[in-house]
Amino acid sequence: MLVKINSVANVGLETVPVDVEVDVAEKGFPGFTIVGLASKAVEEARERVKTAITNSGFDVPPKKITVNLAPADLPKDGAAYDLPIAVGVLIASGQLELPPGNVYFYGELSLDGTLRPTRGILLLALFAKQKKHAVIFVPTPSAAEASVVSGVTVLPVKKLADLVRHITGEKIIPPLPHVAYQNADDEAIIDFDLREIAGQEQAKRALIIAAAGGHNVLMWGPPGTGKTMLARALPGILPPLTDAEALEVTRIFSISGLLPSGVALIKKRSFRSPHHGVSAAGVIGGGTNPLPGEVSLAHLGVLFLDEMPEFPRSVLESLRQPMEDGEVEIVRVAGHVRYPASFTLIAAINPCPCGYLGHPRRECKCTDKQIAKYRHRISGPILDRIDLTVNVAPVEVEKLSVTREHSGSLTSKEAKSSVIAARTIQEKRFAGTKLYTNSQMHNREVKQFCQLTPEAENFLKLAAEKYDFSARSYMRLIKVARTIADLAAEKTILPVHMAEALQYKQLT
Image (tube, rainbow, N blue to C red; front, side, top):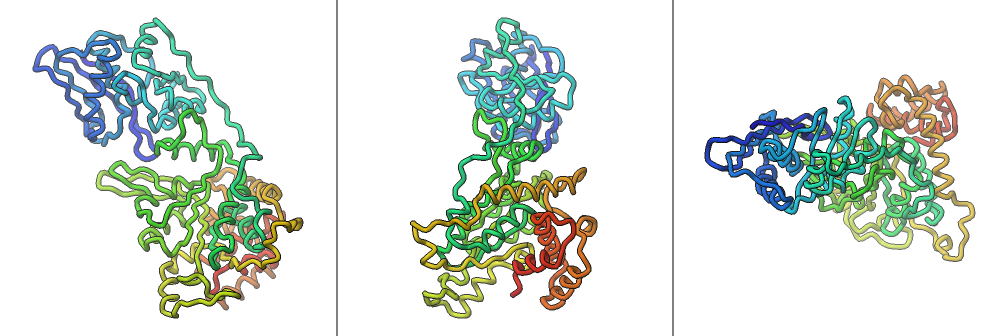
């Protein structure tokens, strides 16, 4: 008997339908064969499925069982086909009837018939939403992420036996209720409050501008001046994720298998801080079936590169495309996938290998050759993609006193309010487009949305001629000035906004 079971395959963030065809032949030698360009994990499903069916109290017929995963030219990876294969075997052998309608099965089986957490459930739910009256059977530990998608009946399955009892009508599995999105708590715990960081007012201002417009920041200064603390304070002033943003981020974590069990949506912006020993594939993404890397896991959040020159040159150069386009394309022989990667880069560097060049109290022991070699580890094209450069100088001893009151310093809550107000202006400005922040504008949008006063335009031209800006630097300077104007609630860019943007520009 031949049956067809509906399932899906996830190629990057794209979901394509897969027909799991199961045939139990009356003639032929007993066996269990899986075809359809299956990976090793899928081929091993035959042992998991046979054992799970037996331990669930059902029979695996001693006949020739053939499983075809169609389309045959699409690579299949992962253990998510265990459940549809098991259901197909039970139906083809006459132990179960195929439920009517648009029904999809997806999940990994344990040997005792229990369903294990499986990545990509949210993508399946979004795909099923396009079908009328779709029903999806998914593992209970991963079902929460599917519950945020309306218009889909999500049935959480704990064990294979429970699924069989549901289909036979013996014990119905109640569908999971739809979970509406709610913004994250504004009082969420953050690593550092801006007020806790002594001094560094210019760096704090740069972080507020970066948070408001999604701009990249380079902080340079001696060790111990607070560069890491400043970077870790940035998530505390970022606005909460919107409904669409939360769904987009959750899709990435779902396909990566990093969504915690029972969590429906990622509600906080990511803060990713990879070690400098990370590979290019770890940053960009990769593998036989390419999974997202750090740049995609930091989508709509923060990617922090501490001691940036210590990262391999190949890793830093691989950041060019995502920093410019907001997405990354991973190309393999079998095809290519795209992942979103619109992140805010925060990089921290020392002025020299020993870190004390220009320090007011400590002497630098590096030679000119060592300093030049150290600085050349970061290429010009990468520096050209940095919007804000700020010097984090040593803090005066008086400001470090534990009894000192930082009454004049801005708190993260206050800074966050300013950032949200600026983001609201940008949200209205970019309504109907795919843009979120000023940093994502291309030249066309810059010309459309960035109106400069004649004085500001003259100031920009003089600065561009004096410092020989590239075309990219020229446009990025306007974007930063646009964000500064948004923070001031100004519709046009004034000379004072352009001047402040210029002081954060790397001029040497």
